[in-house]
Length: 117
Image (cartoon, rainbow, N blue to C red; front, side, top):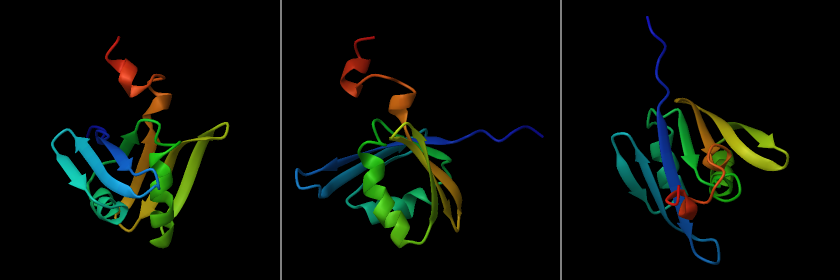
């Protein structure tokens, strides 16, 4: 029996200057989804079957929007860091574990500059 393939997704949170979440976009190999709030996104993410969900510079921005809502749900969280930067967050839910990770540690460039390669 072979090892199960890890399933990946990507999300991005758009917010106002007052840090109000406007929209969360999500994509993986077979889906494109949109959400208008953190709770709605987390409802989807914890049952999505995805193992790791990346956000570019997520540890600096996007993951921070999720932490409070995850804590309110009573989920156990374990962060992993590079210095003081949050590289990722492993979350234990009733549906299993899911990881939110920062892709900037995989691709050390801004999203805007990726097209210049």
